[in-house]
Amino acid sequence: MPLPPLKAPASLLKRFAGSVRGFAASLLLFSTLIAFNLLQTASLLIKLVSPRAFKRANREMADIWWGWCDKVSEHIYKIDVNVSGDEVPWRENALVVCNHQEMADITVLFRLARHRGRLGDLKFFVKDILKYVPGVGWGMLFIDCPFIKRNWTADREYLARVFKKILDNRIPLWLVSFVEGTRIRPHKIERSRAFAEAEGLKPLEHVLIPRTKGFCATVESLRSHLDAVYDVSIGYVEGVPTLWQWIKGYVKRVNVHVRRYAIASLPSGEADLSAWLLRRFEEKDGILDHYYRNGEFPAA
Image (cartoon, rainbow, N blue to C red):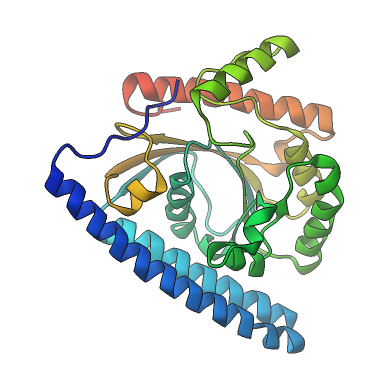
């Protein structure tokens, strides 16, 4: 099983200091985010003249604001994100597949992307309802994140249009997909294990059986544009933090393991791609099992 939720510090003073830090950081970052939303709205005037310049401007705004979020984590909160595994090349296009434990996972990915020149090019598959939410939702709308209803019949044609836009405009990206479809919880692991046994698959202990349809469609649609698929495993220390605990500075170290697969090495066709992804999650389960037993990811 994954780590339990991170506990708050025992000291009342540390909890109070964390709350003060959290409220101050939230106020600063949210107010600047709304300001960026206004700038993004104004950038629609640029789109009338140059759609390419419009995309570039919004990419730069995402890079700046997400960069602020990560620099607060790195330089003020001193959160160490230790990356192991395969070398991640500078600024290549990738589909990023990651285990999903809490919203704090996204802030961990900020560090990885910033250090490889892809922070402003991050795009996430996100719930459709979020596009109506000021701040993060509106910001993601302007950088063309795919908003999905999690109904494959409803999403399929929409995603085809999104992927076509990426291909037609040769948009640089790290496209992040939490293919488990939800944040992991003990009862969800039990459901996932029951599903695996019913389908003749290997039951997993630390991750959920991935949903393969969206992954297959993404790879097949963007194959000519992607350089690689990154299989990212996030391992927290002491416990899994909420986003609010991250903002309060309770987290001091996170370990990340990356396996890079050149896109040319992936098979074609939905059946073979589905089997490929299932194998990766069986391996990820073993990698996380090693991490939880030994406190570090395997060397190879």
